[in-house]
Length: 205
Length: 205
Image (cartoon, rainbow over all chains, first blue to last red; front, top):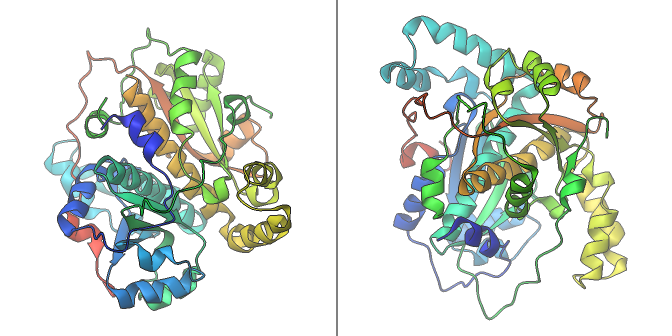
């Protein structure tokens, strides 16, 4: 599917067909595209808990203001961002070194750089922007394979964290409902987008 | 261009052809695709300062550890996330109301919801994840139009803020170098990606 068509056809789908389930093979195919998203130092600081059985989705719905799409969707991805990825760099650096990008002597330098950039007060921003890159990739890859999604950030993060035992290192960045649009229920027209001039600004705007 | 090809061909390009400039018309075409990215309440809480003249790029390079690509690229987008977008909802709500999504009586409810979700300690995470969605859309849209990019977050945010007079409401989320790959300089092979099982985890991982 052409990229511009994917962008045009990707909508935040509110109404999922409860009869149409997405199989794991399809989710793996979506991931095989989405995993190509870039990330800081290639750390890929994200994880997904896929809520798919009725009890999990019911539990998640309670954390998300009771929105019906949480249980109507085939799956809901709980997208987690790793705030402490800079402490877990070794496997990524092993990969870089194995590929000959640089030598072993760079390991500590790169760890120090990452810590300087992403630790402390920057941890959540780091996790959120990286998980945002991945989440967008996931939604576009899904649409290109005929799968609809709905990104949500209107949930009680602490409740999700408790209900799904999310480790402290991870931030709950967003939820993505996944399934097939129930075409009997029309979506609203797409909301407006800001004109170029409003987004692309000059210094001192 | 097919979406999966765009993902495969999008690389973080380190070497830009300094002779090849991207014209504003192309950047507008990229935006016309990327603007379709979703955002919280459709707030589109992002702005871009495009550094394109040599002085601007030199100034920016100093904030980004002297990386040559900052000046070699045709443009560098300074991607800003609006931490206070929840205080600027009226034009977006006007659009929703004009389209008949809901009535005027919902305005204050929605403002209250957004404030509850995104204010205070959540401001940077809100700005970062939304700007991440847009940044990924921008890089993919660019590649589909033959334009290369390189996302960077290894810069001194406060220095960028000062050098470009970024208002307090905005966070400097990342830089995106924009241009054409200098094909005389080969890129490294793509770094590894985590297997499905490492990213898609169970509850209590």
